[in-house]
Image 1 (spheres, rainbow, N blue to C red):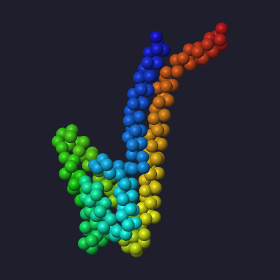
Image 2: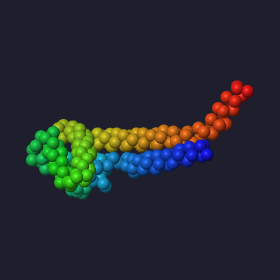
Image 3: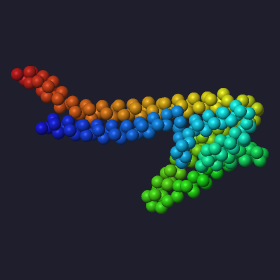
Length: 211
């Protein structure tokens, strides 16, 4: 009876952990190669970089590429890209143009994540996640495109390198999630087999020494 109870408990724990970690792994896997921006469900950082790469390869200037990609994407992220394009065309310095883009996305994200009570807490957390995601995207864009803007160097190689780095980071997150899943499954599985090991292996060995 005790063995059956322990086995049942271990199985229940294993099933629950499997369900939770499978959802986490599926969520990470669904973003493989395309780290998403929190507020724009259909937007990914690698997609933004890939679209900018295509626009630049077609001969667009950096402001024109940012404006075209931002307009095609729409949403908070697209608004930030268009703001950067407007600032650059107006003669704003490179760094300050991206500061204005970040400020634009923060304002837009704040308007879309308002709420009261528990909803307000979730909205605040969502805003922080959005700000971090947009900030990372704009950091990558600012760093990748700066040599092209200041010295006329082709940005294609740096954009491609950024895409590869994002893909590598995402694969690492998938492998980490898979590793956590396997480790967390070992414990309840071990609990299922431990009583049998004690009964079949340990107790007979002790009994043989005593007898």
